[in-house]
Length: 238
Image (cartoon, rainbow, N blue to C red; front, top):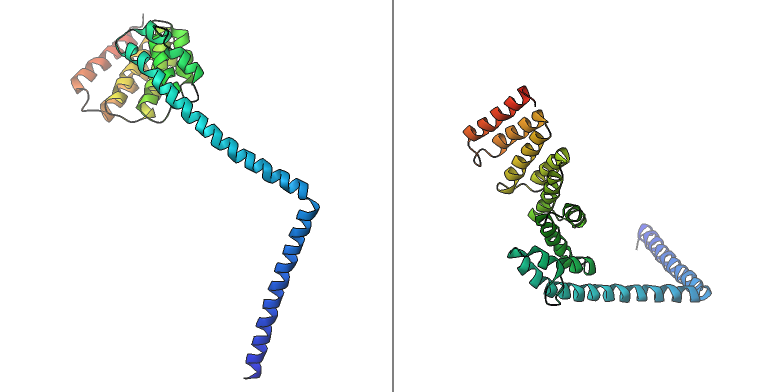
């Protein structure tokens, strides 16, 4: 064997021993720390174990609550869909209504859905302030139901005579989730609210947006009539 190879072999063995020494030293330090802080380490491990158990227990608790809420929601939703809004809100025959479900199970999906139904039922009954409370507390996902909740808030403000706020929310609902059926409807509502607020320039912009984005949803002739009406209102403010 050449001197070069012997030298390389010696250096390799030296590096190997150094790594072993480092591992042993690190192990010894870790053991010494554990031995010195044994109570603390056991306490941390126990706390972690309790946290894991707690998380598992909470997840199981939520699943149980979700199942209960879904079962309770069936009857008031049926009442809501048949137009029995007060009965849906309060419950009948000792049943639980939408308001109680929303408050008791609000941290579940079914309880959150109860908020939406309760908000719309209250709106239908003309109880706008309470409807607004439930709409605003509804936890919105980025979907059509979330957009509908925003439009619900807009409708409340429109009925309360706060037309500028209503128009802004209708526009937000239209842009929240792009949909060729609901988005133009919300934009029409926004334009109407801007007209009621006498913000005619904004109403014209919304009508123009509808024509550009959804030409297949409204005829140009109908849009021209709407635009002409706004321009007439703009020229002859009451």
